[in-house]
Image (cartoon, rainbow, N blue to C red):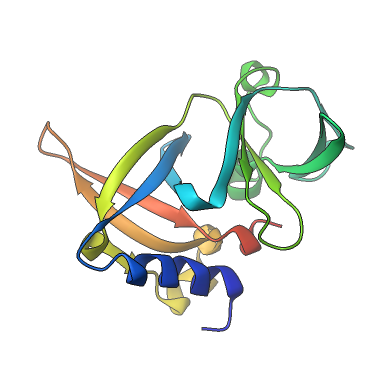
Length: 161
């Protein structure tokens, strides 16, 4: 695989063999997505976004810089966020992966979880090319207290834009 972020995610998981990896998880509709905590700079409260509204990428003004913000709801489901979410929530600000940080708009506070690296699997290229979740590089399934399983897709930051 030649994708930089897939390699970064894979190297991060491989370097923690027989250990766990900390994931910042968040829900986008019925999907649970995550970023390795080492790829996250900070989580902040919502600020107004600016853009044409035609794309899933907008801008947010933070302190002394502008950051591109990805609306995953629009990217994945091809529809606008519900009105209530458009004016509240949080931004996950990533570390600089491709020379600049990236923001992800989420409606609820994210959760931090530990996942054994033995439970994290690379998503096959055939799935990534055929599904709207081409933005994910790895997947894990976590058993829940109620007996069900929770599937978590780990994002490939380079695929978000």
